[in-house]
Structures are given as C-alpha cells and as structure tokens.
Amino acid sequence: MRLIGLLAANHRLPLCAVILLSLISAVVSVAVIAFIQIKLVASQGELWANLGWFIGLLLLLLISATCAQVALHILGHRFVYHKRLQLVRQLLATDIEQLERLGGAKVLVALNTDVRNITIAFVHLPELVYGAVLCATAFAYLAYLSLPLFFVSLIVIAATAGLGFILVHKISAYIKQVRHYDDELYSNYQAMIDGRKELALSPARAQAFFQEDFHSNALAYRQAVTQADIHNGFAGNLANTLVLGLIGVIFFLAVALEWAPMSVASTFALVILFLRAPLMAAMSAIPVLVAANVSINKLNGMNLASDPEAHSTTATLDAKKAQPDANGVGFQSIRFHNVEYRYQSEADNSFSVGPINLTLERGQLIFIIGGNGSGKSTFARLLTGLYRPQLGHIEIDGQAVNAAKWSEYRQLFSAVFTDFHLFHRILDGHGEQVPQTLVNTWLNRLAMQHKVSANDGRFSHVNYSQGQRKRLALLLAVLEQRGCLLLDEWAADQDPYFRNLFYQDILPLLQQQGITIIAITHDDKYFDQADRILRMDGGQLSELTPAEVQQAQQVVKEVIN
Image (tube, rainbow, N blue to C red; front, side, top):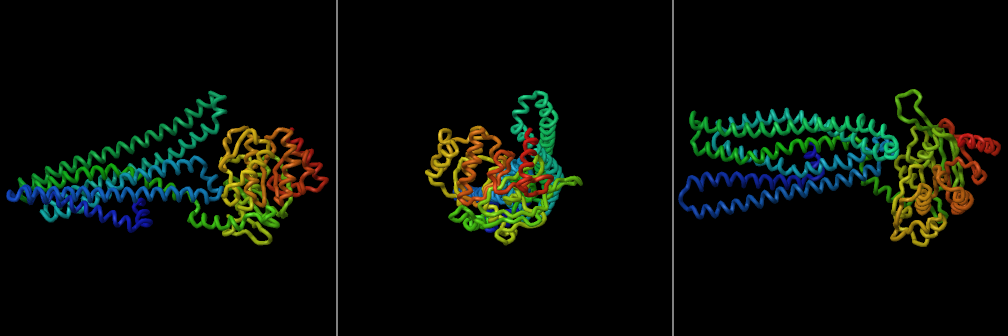
C-alpha cells in the first residue's frame, strides 16, 4: 500500500523500530502459547514456578504489544500532522490558476475527507501490522510442530487471502466511486451555500436543485458505500468461516489420518483461534487502508506545488527584498513585453488576452476601463502575478521576471479584488503588527472608526455592508506598504460622498507616498484624476489620448446606462 510506502520513505527508522517492537510482541505471543503446551499442559511438576513464568510472559506480552501499538499510533499521527501541514503549504504555494481549475469544493474535500481518511487509516494500521507480523511468527512455530499440518493450514490461509484479494479489488472500486461522489456532494454543498439567497427566493429552483443535483449524488454515494460495506462484511465472514473450518480439518487429519499427535493438533487449534481475532481485525482494516490509498492518489492528482517548505523559505527571504523603500515603492518600472494569456478550452473561440506591451512607472495613477468580459480582471491577475504569462514576459527595472523571482514579483503588489476576502488580522508586508496609531489614522480616514475597533492587531468585526468591507480591505492593502496597489472596481459599492472622497483625497494621498495605483473603474467623472487611462477591449489593451478620453467617458456612460 502507498501508505506504508510513504511511511517507509519519510520515517524509515521509526517504522523499522515499530516493526521490531511488533516482531518482539509476536514472538512473545507465540512463546505464551508454546509455554502453555509445554509447561502448563504437559508438565505436572513445578506448577507454581511455571505459573510464575507464565504470569511474567503475560506481562512481557502486555508491555511489548502496548509499546508496539503506541509507537505506531505516535508515528501515524505524526505523519498525518506533517501531511496536513504539507498539504496546506502546498495549497498556499500553488498558483491560483491551478486552484481555480480544481475548484473550491475539491480543495475542501481534500482538506477534510482525504486527511480524515488517512488519519483513520493510521488508527487501524497497528492492527494490520501487528496481525501480519503475528501471523508470520505463529506460522513459523506451526511449521516447527508439524510440516504436513502447516502446509494444509498454509493452503487454506492462502486461499482465504486470494478470495480476500478479489473482494478487496471490488471494495477498492466502490471506494473510488464513494470518493468521486464526495467531490460532487461538496460541490452541491458549496452551491447551496453560495446560492442560498437565490434558492430561498425560488422554491422551484430549490426543489430542482435538491432532486436533480443533490439527491442523485447522495443516492449514488449511498449505493457505492453500501456495496463497499457489503463486500467488506462478506470478506470478514468468509475469513471467519474458513479459519473455523481449518480447525476442523486439522483435527480430522490428526485424529482420523494420524498425521500428528492430539497435543500437536490441539496446539494448532489454539494458535489458529488465537490468530482469528488479529486476522479479523486486519481484514476490517483493509477497506480503511484502501480508502486512504484512494485519498493519497487524489491528493497527488491535484498537481499542487512541490517542495512547499523551500517555497516558504524563499518567500520569506524574498519578502524582505521585495518590500518598498522609504518612499513606499519597490521598483522604478514594470514592463509587459508581448504578454499573452489564453484560457484553456477546446473551443476555437476560447478567450485570450494580449499581446500586451505596456510600461508602468513608479508613482503613477492609472485607470483601466472596459466593458464586461473585455479582459480587465485577467489583466489585473497578470499584472499582480497571480496568472503567469503563457507567452511573452514581464520585466522589473529591465530585468525579466523568471520562475525563481515570481514570488518576489508578487510581493510588489497589494490589491482589493471584486471577490476579495476580508481577514481579521492586520499585518504589514513583513507579517508584523502595524502600529496602532497608523491603524487608527486610516480608520478615521476611511470613516470606519465608529464601526469597528482594532485591538491587538485584529478587527473587532468584519460583518458589514459591502462598501464598508471594501474600506477595511483597502486599509489592509495600504498598511502592507507595497509599491503597487491594484483596486478592482473598488468605488462601485461606495456612496457618492465617499466615492468623491476616494478619488479626490485618498488616491492623491497614496500617490504622494510614491505608490503606483492601478484602478479598474467606470467612474468617468473622475477620469481627470488619472495620469494615464488604459482601455481593455476584446482582450486588447490600449492607452487613450486626451481626445479619446472624452470619447471613452461617453462610452462608459452608455455601458452604465
């Protein structure tokens, strides 16, 4: 199983120690059975002395078995802990393009279901490891007692294992289906949460969503998991029946055919009965391990960023280099050279942006206009480094931004996108706490001082209207003190008074601090505030002349109307 392989690859020495402890426990278990046969049953002398040795062996068995299982539990949960950290680091290091292709539901089910499956597997792993080691040790002892009976036992156990393998293959197929419908159900949950207002307003749509989407996936999930459990139960019952049947065969061969003495047959029966519980536990652990294996394959198939710890270290070092200087900037110019980006699609009419040739100078205030679907948001993501150019390249102060410098390039920017998330934590660009006086200054400037307080570097609340939430998002972006600030339709949710304050006071103030500002906007009334106005149309970016600005104002009015 891949689970064991991952343990062996990442924790080889601890795993070897666990196996050694399991082997010691298994040897002591067999020694207890042998002691019962040789000393307690066959020998009548020194009964009390033998009883003392027997109690000592039982204590040794308890200690060795407990140590083996505790060690494996500690190792397993440590592995899960590191796997969870690694997964989150990978998600943080993965380009937004890949995360968007995966979708939020698949990311959530990976963090929840897949990590849970791996955790549960490690809870059951001791049973499988202990059962396997114990069976190997016990069968070695049985071979020592009687080779003919041993080979018969081996054949029956091998046949049981073969049938079990066939059933496990079927169980694996059903568990893969279960995992697939997990993805679908999480997508339904997300759609239900995101579309709760629309579903509340339209009972017919809600009923159609319930019947056609959720109910069909829930039914398919139920059918797949039921089949998996049925096959698992049958596998356990089959193993139990064959093991008990083996005991009858052993006594028949020993008594009727005189293959071995009765004492040997009794020892065989005792050992097989002793193995019955570990074997059943191991059989019950197999579906859990199969589910964990499916989850590991799912995680590997997400194509997340590799070597996240190295990425994190590099990002930390680059953050210091990418931070603005005393004037609030970290660059002199940004240049787009024949940059192109096309959305992946099999259709011939898939949308593309570019080629873009553009130079942005430090401290400029730039407005970007354009209709819906013209490519403004795609350009914003290209500019901030969230999307990487598929053709062409970006230069910072004449130096091309390569893969090694991509994290450093992104840290030139802070942004408020239309689909922004508002965090409680207030941090500067180094991840350090911002002075309280500076936070209070911006709360007053954004007219939020009576709505929210900031204590110990956290907002007291973030559940406000969209316009007020955007003000707090702007505060967070400004306090990061990056060289370039991108605002995507920021003023669209502001009242007329604060919209005027934003264009007339706040943007000029930020520009005076040397911050380069790129604002996507339709507010033609304030076009005269910008140093440059760029227009995106059909994925093509162009800069407007003063005469074209007046014409664009008229176009914007028509778009809005």
